[in-house]
Every structure is written in C-alpha cells, then in structure tokens.
Image (cartoon, rainbow, N blue to C red; front, side):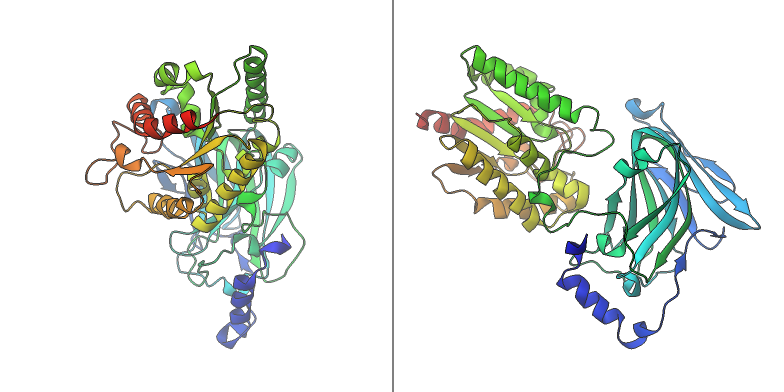
Amino acid sequence: MSGVHNSFLGALLATAASGALAQAAPDITLLPAPSAAWRTVVGHWENQVELTGDGVVVPAPTADYARASTLAASALMNGGKREALLLDWKDLWQATLRIESREPLDLRPYLGGTLEFDLDVAELGKGGVRAKLSCGDGCERGVNLIEPARSWAGKGWQHVTVAMSCFAREGADFSKVRLPFAIDATGTGRVSVANVRITRTAKAGLACPDYRTESVTPAMLNESWAVDWWQPRHEQKLQEKARLIAAGTPPEVVFIGDSITQGWEKDGSEVWQRHYAPLHALALGFGGDRTENVLWRLQHGEVDGIAPKAAVLMIGTNNTGHRAEAPERTAAGIKRLLDELRQRLPKTQVLLLAIFPRGDKPDDFLRGINQRVNKLLEGLADGRSVHFLDINAALLNADGTLGKDVMPDLLHPNAKGYDIWQRAMAPTLQKLLRATP
C-alpha cells in the first residue's frame, strides 16, 4: 500500500498543508447522520432509486437473464438518525449503495488519512463487495473486499480501514467530490454498513494494489463472478493442451485473451471449426481477464510444452472497463505479456491485435482509452517476431459507430463479428503461418 504514495499524492498533500487547507478539518461522518444530511441511492445498471424512508426495492432489470434478480435496501433509524444501511441483492452483476453529498466536498486535506466503516456480512458466498469513492468528474476508484468480506460472513460487525491513498491517481481531482462513499456489489449477498467516516489520520488498514504496477503483476482473477470457474477453466485448458500433445497434434496456433477470445468457443464456434480447428488451435480466452491475469496464466503453464507457429494476442479492454487504466499502464502490461511469450515461445510468430472498439459512438469514453492504448501497441511490434494488426475498421460502420448487428452489447462480437474478425485477419495470419518453419 505504501507504493501508492507517489509524487502526485505528495503534491496533493503539500497543497493540503498550505493556505486555507492548513486549517484542521474535522472527520467527515457519513453514518450515523440525519436522513437529510446525505443522499442515499440504491441501484443497478438500469435503475437507481433514492432511499428516502426506511426501505426501498429497486425494479429488476429488463434483460431476460436478470429479470429474476432482486435489489433492496433499508435504513436502521435511531433518534432521527440513520445508524446503519442494509443492502440485499441477488443475481446481479452490478449493484450499488451510494452515499452522495448534496454539496461538493473538498477531500484534499484527507488524502493522507483513511476511509473507515463497520461492515456486517450476513451472506456473501456467491457475491462480492467493493468500497468506492469518486476522485473527480467521471472518476471513481474502488478497493476489492471480496476476500476479507467472505471470511467475515456470519461473524458480526467488522471494522474496515482503507487508506485514502488507495483511491489516488494522476489526474484525480478531490477538490469537489460528490460521492464520498459507496458499496459496489456483485452476485448475491446481504451486508450492512455503519459508522462510515473519512479521517485525516493515517492508520494501518487493508492492503490495496499499487496501481502503477497492477497491470504487470501476475494475479488470478478475483471477482465474485469468476472465482468459482476461473481456476478450473485454467486446469481444463492445461488438460486440453495435454490431449493435443498426446494425440500428436499440438496446436499450430493459439489465441490468448479475455472474453472476446473465449467467444470463439461460443458465438464464434462455427467460424472456429471451419478455419482454426484444422490447425488444432487452442483458445486461451478467459472472460474478465486483464493483463495481469493473462500473465499469471502464462506463468502457470498454459503455453509450456508447445511451439505453435503463431499466437494471436488481444487483451486490454478490461483494464480499460474495470479501472479506466491509463493507456501507458495497459500497454506496459501487454509488453510484459509479449516478453513472456518471447521467453516461452521463442520460435512462435506473435500477432498482436489492436483492442477492439467498444461503445456505440466514436467519442465513447472507454473506446477512446482503447484507441490510445492501440497507438502505443504499434510501437511494440518489431516486424520479425511480433506483428501488429488493427482490424477495427472492418468492425465499424462507415461513420465510426459500432453496430449491434456485429456486437449486440457493444463489446462482444456475435457470429457475424467473428466472421468479420476471421476474414480481416486471414491474410496476415496465413502469412505468419507460412513463415514459421
């Protein structure tokens, strides 16, 4: 956690120690507090409802897969104050309980302090929680609590301390914060939160990743919707590779990536069977993976013992979507993967693909981050063993919009999208397959 205290944070703290900010700022108490002191909002990706009374039930999302989900919140009142808030959710990939400020807060004097709260976990066996606050316009940062929170289930109230530095990044603006606290939830669970405050005092607390090195530090995917299947899928892929080797048909090409690559086994399966199954291809795509998760998999045997003619690598859109990571850090993670592949597959030609477009319009915020990553990726190709290819124009309409006839959710290709991918990539991939002895 100490690694997060970089020059940027030092500059903010120096600013906080001067001028008007030098005046001692009291702790900011979010709970307990009168109902009107803060705006409490409960919701998911389709509906957000303000909690104004003792309880609220949020209408379920309209998508078929989520219509049976539930989301509710309630407040424990005592003497006209809200003492605690309860969040109860089921089968949701995203739910949130947000305590919002009615007026902007200047959190700069608190960046050397802590976010503290009490958490009572009644149920979290199939869920996860993350503590979060905003860091400027369009900027929200969170700390994953899934491991400690699951261990606290049924054990009553637990005191949680997180350094405010865990939420600091370059470019963050803590001078006008509207969201001083939120609990983001996934899966299924039931938790209560109380005694929420932001203090100026530094204390030992839960560790948080160093955002500067997160993309290059190998890690398993630790999300509530992934922990049950992620490592078993890794083991299955090791077995699949072993069967190909035992049959005398080791893979001539491997595809490495996230859910977009995993989709070759789903929406892209027909195209895969026609074009890549004859090459005994191996699909090493895992939904939700970021660069650090692929690095962990490579270091735990997924390409050991084979020498494919070509490896197709596309990764990074979850670095963008999950944490809006700076393009330079995502590119550093991808470079680290290329170095790992060069070490483990020295004779393999690597085809590095530009991250696919996402969002419906050319000015989509997350698409813009991916585009900036792609510009950096061009410089990672040497034209000898690493080759860069950008097929994004083939996936887009002439005006730069992304059609739902190609990516229904504006992120993952459907069968038509995988067909476009194969055809646009074919000339380059075939050249690399022929070039490898």
